[in-house]
Structure formats: structure tokens, C-alpha cells
Image 1: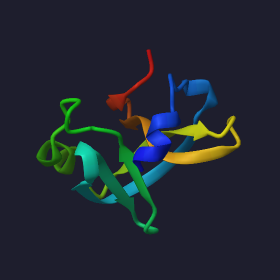
Image 2: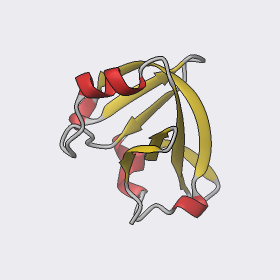
Image 3: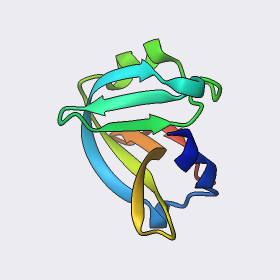
Image 4: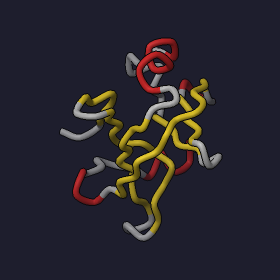
Length: 100
């Protein structure tokens, strides 16, 4: 996870891949990352989310077993969608964003 995060610079909403997922598991990853699993077993993460003021208990209450919208950063010249979450929303509530 950390390697791709190092190449993601200034993600933009209009160049992100948008996916709607049901989050079934939330855990602490390496380097203060927060890792999210969906119902299909796919994994996504917020880079250093615990250092950015996010809290696992609060996230479990807000989004566990609910549908969220993820904006996933693209890497390698925009040809590959990463697992890096640039923005997460539930309904109209922004849970996390890197967008300016």
C-alpha cells in the first residue's frame, strides 16, 4: 500500500475512479493506514488515516455494513486504478477527502 501512496500526488475528483461498495470490515493497517474490506473481499485504504484524525470506532459506527462511495486515485499515468481512497462519502456526507 505504501509504495503506491508515494506516487499519488494531488488527486482530483474528475480523474478518480468512482465505486460504490458495502464496507464489511475496517481495520488498522501499516503506517497508520485504515483498511476497508468490501463484501466481495476487495481492500481499499486511507493512507495514514489515523494520523489524519479518523477514528476506527467512529468509522465502524458510521459506515460498517453500509454503502459508501469511494473515489479511488489513479496511478501510472492514469492507466491503473489504485486501492488508495481519495474521498469517501456516505449519502451526502463526506467522511474523508483529499480534494481541495
